Amino acid sequence: MAGFGLLVGVIFPFAVIVLGVQPTIALRAKFFAGALVAGVTVGLVNFTITRVVVGARLHQLSARMQYVGATLQQATFSGDWSKCSPEACQLLVDSNDELGDAAGSFNRLLESLAASREIELAIKSVGDSLTGHLAFDELVSTVLDQYMTHAMAGAGAVVVERDGKLSVDAQRNFIGDLLADQQALRKRSITSVEIPGDLTVDGVVISFRPREVLVVPAWFGGQPLGGVILAFSENIHPNTSRLLEAFQASTAVALNNALTHERFQRLATLDPLTEAYNRRFGLNRLNEEFSRSTRTGVPLGVLSLDLDHFKRINDTYGHLAGDKVLRSVARDMFSSMRSGDILVRTGGEEFLLLLPGAGHNDVATLGERIRRATEMNKIDVGVAEVTVTISLGALSYYGVGAQDPEELLSKADQAMYVSKESGRNRLTVTRLQTPIHS
Image (cartoon, rainbow, N blue to C red):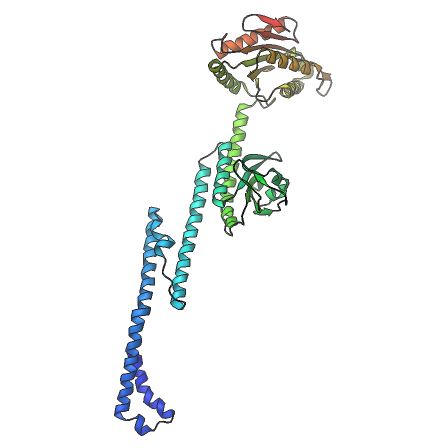
């Protein structure tokens, strides 16, 4: 800066000659020396001002950048980002000049880094939560909680597609009418759906009129799995959709894994022919219900069922016809059962019905209903229509009368054998001591 001032001092006398000053004056030693001194002085003053004012601020900006760089490097490995928050590292913007603009740009960079870190943490939080659950019910509840928390939604639901039908598997203050727009769930991109003007969400502690609704679909392997529906009472933040997009892939993988696990669990407990529970699962449930009834005294109804002369059907029409008969009889039982009753296929043509909470009259009524439905059903086996009857043994356990589940099941079987020996196609109800025909 001083050299530049000296150069100006050298040039100045010649410049004033061009402007009309007499050479004899401009080139005098005193004038020339004065110009040099003035140029150097101005240069020194500018240098001092630059050093004190501009240099200090540039040094501050440089020091902040170095601090942020070192802190970011340390936080990457330690996970502690508290020392690099925008509040801790931002610069004071005290002017409207280029230096003020530079400080403002630096502060905005810090805010962008913090926002990026928040998104990274949100994605990690969702990913960690999803990988921690394989049970379907727990997973969908976690998915909804995470989505609503990070998107700041006031209501929502997780909707899953099974066999072409949509079902709501988790909900918070959910708007059922939103399922009318099912096409949004079959798109790959996040969609904002139209809201009916009179639609209001009524929750347990809140009630609001949604201003916007987002549908976040979940796809895996080229197939739609369902998705997440979120309702907002306020305008959605511009970054919300981008954040939800970052959740989509991990959510789809987790949902697919949970659905696969659910299917395998179901297959492991079901008889594939009749869709009744298999013997292993059924006996486990009998143990559970027996223990509950023993503790509480709440009745447990048990029905033991066996098809009459089933071997004749197999011998006459073949085993495929026998399979049709078994499926048809199982459907009759399902249509007659109450909600919460458990149908078990314990053998070839043998079934067990567990009826939690059913007393003597209940088991008698249900058993007779199943017997009549089976007797009246004409089953098309291809070459003919056949009818089949069943023999039933029933009892109700109130916590006394049997030492263990095996004895309870044995007594129900004994009542069924009484029906067989008494002419078949009948129900025998026992009170754990004396059988009573009906």
